[in-house]
Length: 155
Image (cartoon, rainbow, N blue to C red; front, top):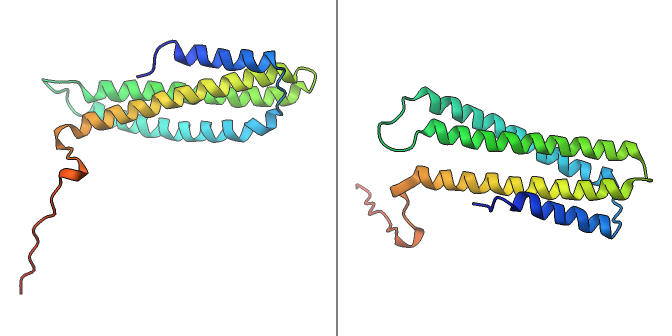
């Protein structure tokens, strides 16, 4: 998984660098990226909520990890990333309203926010991959070791 300080330290470094070099981006350039990220994460949030409901309907296993617990952890992670992406879109709209005088500050904040949401999205994808590997468990057979089935056609 990602190191705990990574989601905070990297965006701060990006924001500080953008502020130091007076990077001035138009907020409307980043608005479509923020909107698409928000839409994708909201859809994924709805899917993970359905998965959470399905996992909660099944009784808790006597041995091993409860599937409802892992589904809840994934739902919380996806939902938090969706809220942060929505706030980033709001920051883009605010940057368009503020105007050009404070554009270098809003550019630094937007670049830091976009980096932060990107790292959160990376964490969501890594969590999905880890859960998929846990679900498949012992059934996974690498491609190189599979043999072709012996199929004979009856005449």
